[in-house]
Image 1 (tube, rainbow, N blue to C red):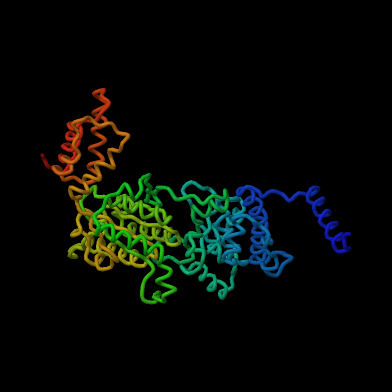
Image 2 (cartoon, rainbow, N blue to C red):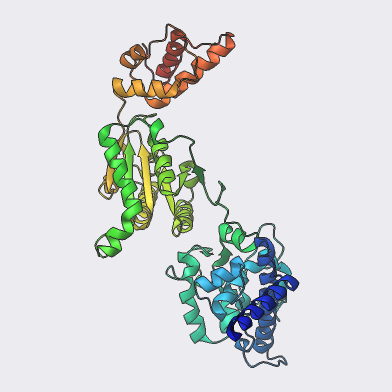
Length: 475
């Protein structure tokens, strides 16, 4: 016989089940729809605040005494990416207003058209800020625009607002916003207020897109289908690579749990040097894959500019974007930018040395991993070398290592003629792994061109000869 409490519990469970069947909980919205729903409310709030600020500033009739009387939407139970960012960093009224201001040109550009009306001198209001884009016809905000919205004519609030644009604030430290100064000597608040492209993607379509190569971001994500088993390194080189990997994985333990953060900087800088084709780029890619970090190869040709200050600006933009990311920055052929400083004889020499000094400072302060690669260590400025945590030499492979490379390259699925002697090739020809790869490619194409099914010894030798000629060598 059931007790009254058991009957009550079962009755309650039956009622709950019936309620769930009649009113099933809604399935979660797709990220883009959740963001759109959230931002629609946030835009309405932003527009109301903007109208109040303009009315108060120009002493027009208004039902409010200040902008804070209009609370932002409640995001407590909102699952959108925007809500998650706001809750994660504890953004309040003012931070949300600044974030929406940076978002507005992308989600509701016409909302900023109110800033276009002219003053009595038939020009735009200086206090509104703004900057003009090359193609966008709408109003683009600056930090001055944010100051107008939040502070109006209140200098105390204007001064406090400056803290939002410091490197320690989540806006910059977490890669949410970008503050881009327009020129030397101009007021800080005239700097463009921009939202980072990856954050824009997350807050709109719900996808954190990885940046792709562009003028603003001259770096390319590099990956590899290979694994550590495909790489042949000298034992000493392998040990150095393991130390780099260990640091990436255990830096928090060393810096925080062991209390060494006040003595050691969080970043790690390494120089890979050695002949071409010895595995420097592949090793950087494999380090990233093993620790779950994206590896970006920097295009130095796009980074360096003949115009004074542009190189530093390009470098600053790159490091600012990478600051809060789990990235490895890989500078290939690094001596093009990290080369030795010259005696100062002309203004060009002085400017070039300033670029190197600026780069040295940014590399040293970067909290992530920076890998520089060069064929000749002697080309790298000594000031850089002293600040590397490791100098990793990639030597030409020895005969035993070359034999392993040939075997890994010509796996069981590759048909070889009976005359192929990999031992002889490894012993006789001193070439790097990259050259072996190219030689095998040439041999395969030569075999197909001659309508054969098996690669011969002569095919491989012809491929080696071509590689040696590239280096100005002969057999």
